[in-house]
Image (cartoon, rainbow, N blue to C red; front, top):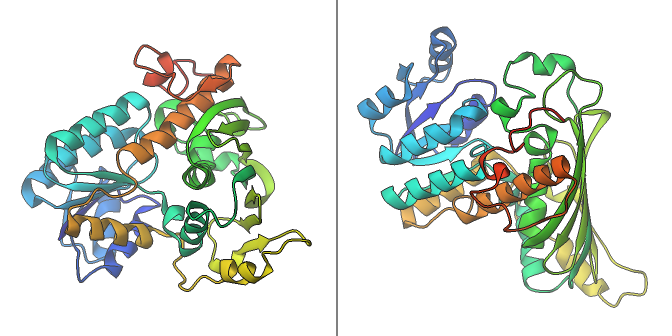
Length: 357
């Protein structure tokens, strides 16, 4: 399978290493970037045979079956559609695009071409997360009741020296959609359809356009309630997910990644589920939440002709949540799922055209 990489910035090496691990199924034939010196250095270091300044030229010349997009966020929507229409499947760094309008245009391109665009959401593909998902679907943990989602990271002002960081146009939002999205997406996958969200955002201690602190309350269709806190100004960094079910609490405390042993299962002292607890904790394989896990799944889908999980409805569901999150923060309203339509300003931009918090 011929693959090409678009964008050779900071995250590109992670994507290339995932591709290299699948060398029996994938050959990286080209890379694209508007900065020639950086591009040539990247290709030389990774033995990529050809390089291009412009994506369309690469698509015309190489005709890749897979394009991995690792360019700045505000280029994603156009590149996704262009690659789909050129006959390629796409694996795109998050965010897949900057609005529901762009997401619907990407889905329309999928239906026109028969190709798929999948967004990186690597935590879903870890062995631990899949174990928890299977236990939930089987009803073994009981009904979900509450959840805590905490992404408290630290980004100094120097982080925002790249002109597109911390801007609505460049990133489609602030800390919630760029940092917190990892655990938010995982929560939405595990707990199912959400019903309503109420959020607050702020920009604290940094001179940037978008928010760097946020909190939200979420109600799910199954009745569960969740609290979400995201920060880019927390000196002691931590990621924490706590899921409370009728029969057990499931927790994972980490920073940027986790392993099976980081997941903790707890039951009440008087519970009769002790025999099940050891089985719940026992995860047979160790698949980390990395790019390779998701790439491998996408390649399997390509070979079987199936839609990959993080394309179409699934990324749209998460994107709709984030659009509703920002609409709530800007308007002070509780936002119901399904109420942001093409006549709504928040369908077209995450901030509804309002550029300051």
